Length: 380
Image (cartoon, rainbow, N blue to C red; front, side, top):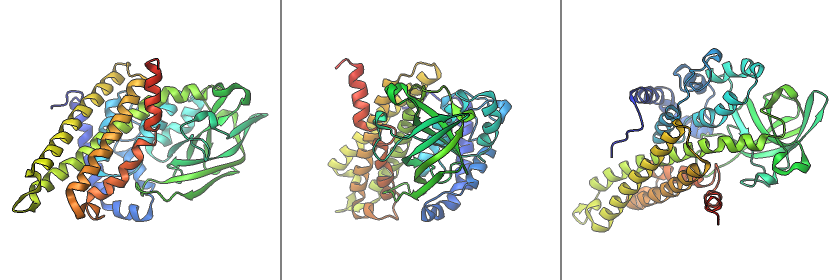
């Protein structure tokens, strides 16, 4: 089914993204997978291609474009390529909105030019060893001391935890206020007491650096408060829908790429004198996957349209996030099975897709959390 959500300018950006991937990522992907870390220079290259900071104000080096469809195009093309790529979605879809909407004029002048050029890499630190989806369990805290907040605590599973220069840390600043007592503090590379722990050894997405972070009496200037003091929870809730939609976009695009490759394999691979795709069971499986991917894509595109129109709700995004990521998991698993023994070999892209996609039903809010959010909205 033809997609109608994108216009000419979006498809032009898609071509730019493809060129960027071909020239700046593909030649280095194997090395980055081996190193388990992308080179920082690729973010600067992305800045030169206009793939970072396009949604930031022009006066600070951005593109001044407020259209999430541009974000979606980049997400889709990177998802098709695979995980051995820079975390542009993290920069554009997650950290970027905080930088664009919550920064003061002074903070914009200090951070946005470097962020838009790719010279400053951002991260957001929410999860802790004892608190994941349940933000109420966050123990990292900050106490005001003159013109600084003294920050103590630990975070884990932090995307871009190694490469990041600016880390938005969710800290409890009013212990008695529950969810009304969180503040967002921007911790900068080199601040005394800020340490990066081990680069986590993950099942998949090896080139995407994920790390533990620790904060011991880190003195964060009050000038580094992002948004309002004690309003951190509200800031997080405002930005989570776009993050979850971004994950849904990547899930569908990645699953479709794997399905397309598997469809060709099913046509080429012969067994008992015929292509394996021509067996009725396999043909039915392929038909089911093609149908479900089309339907999921249409819902995601409708959510994209809703973002442009200012109508996307947290519930809409939650539906998109859990359904598409669970679908991607099912589709890619079925594709491994259709490959037979070859599907278990790392030299086949389907094997890498299988382990890379597994995290999607977990990060950004687990499937269970998404369903609970939707259920509460239904009044049950």
